[in-house]
Length: 263
Length: 122
Image (cartoon, rainbow over all chains, first blue to last red; front, side, top):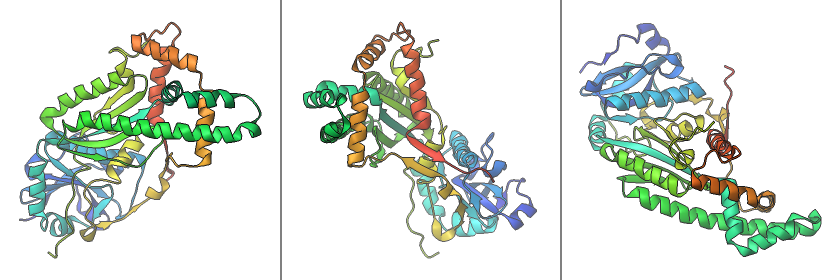
């Protein structure tokens, strides 16, 4: 039951600093190659029983969230995912040392982690963002709503004070049209993608021109079908919606654990 | 000059294996993933330096005026021409418009309507 570690975590770094943790995987999976961790440190594992935490040394238990570090955190997890199932941690989890990591984290939660690792085996997260092309969607709105087209003509010229109330009215109508279209398009996109996914998390924050921001939990075997669906959607909406599609990723949006029981 | 090779859709679909920009990564690892506060000494400083300035849609006169201005500025003849060029898959577009739209796509997503500012001085 003794904790083991990669040879890289020297005794000095453990004494003054902490141990940054990226995620939990099976011990047999081993550390990811070709990924450098937060602060550029090498990534190793701390194993206990059949589980392993992906870790690297940090100089202190406080971390600054720098751009490079945020990207590294995510790259370590992406590299780990290529080797096996991994449960991703949120950025910024630091343990005092290996003993703390094992005694307070890996060991008390072993059953829970094992259950989650089995649950997410062969499943990946795909994230999709879709946003309107502003010019295209506004042109669509003007062309399809005669009242908006008329108000547009009436407010294009003339002095600002005189057209002010009409402009407010115009903008209000445009905002309502955009809302309507966003709802409709979001539903349409979700209908197509949801059937390929085991689970979906949709971000509901209303961001300007954003049609959809969602994470999909997908069986690895279905990723290529999802790719095809994305290409189809991009073709259908070419000219009006831009898509950004990222993955396969560790299941960031879908892992959660209960509140810690009294160990 | 044409960058797109697989027809029009590719201009509008950007695929990446892992998050390439700060906006993506922030969504993914600052808000999501396992977090187990009770057991963990967690101390992240500097996150407040990353200000997330997403343009949330708020029903206000300012927003309405902004939309009205945008609609007023709209050049309908141009957007129609661009739309047709896209539909034909004509990325030569006769006048280089296709290229402009591809670059526009990159711009839109790297800037991503969210401006992340950060301090990396130290």
